[in-house]
Length: 340
View 1: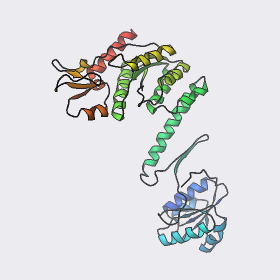
View 2 (view 1 turned 90 degrees about the vertical axis):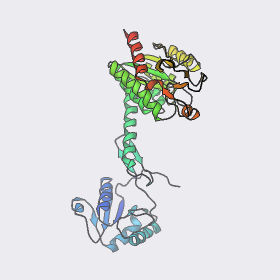
View 3 (view 1 turned 135 degrees about the horizontal axis):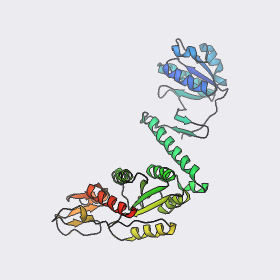
View 4 (view 1 turned 120 degrees about the horizontal axis):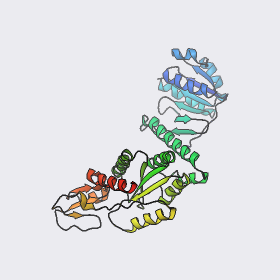
């Protein structure tokens, strides 16, 4: 089993066999880390002329092996790479190779370092081009967490943040700046489609009311990324005036739970009448996950796209309330009325 380690290379000896472009990239990395880099090759890439490395003979390379911390094989000769690394392993030296199955026991990771943070990622060769994207995503998330933490009066509340989705973190960061927010509270659903639908409503809301930042939170047990009480506690500490808008078809347990939590934290609530039949045409019949189907031609409506409802009702017409522009315009109209 592999273990990821952050190893100090200041003044350590690093040996590199080969002097092509890959060897050049590795040499630069370890020179920057403060290592003493020694290279043996029959020919050297021109980039090595500007690099502080030691060019040595094959015999000098073998003599240095017992003192090395890392040996890197970078030639296109697999047999030569394997022979070099096998000798290194005999002395307990860490090994890397540009080719697979040459005796390498150490694998580089794509990394990002700052004064206070180190992030490293490796897809184990399955998708190397994703490493940089994953690193950037993680870095952006860390920056969001730090920005929100810096704005908190009670820094201990930062322990509530790591579970939050990226969308919620962005909402909190923007809310801390504008100090005015509109928060939609929904049951939620699995998958990216439902998230996109809720995110679109938030985007339309911000376009309509630019002095507010808008976001959403799911409170269904299977869809929670940040509990509503935690989110409102953070907003309260950030001194954000947040208008809470529960969006449910029925006054059920989730609606009542949301209202209880909103009231407990003292945030204002906007009640918007939501009728799923609002998006149907004249003569069309409705059914939902709680209202039974009256006939074979009834139309299924849910607030957000649900893979479960779609699979359970494959042969019916299925419409999503928040995908209907008439429905989102109606929600925005009620918000405007409440703000006047």
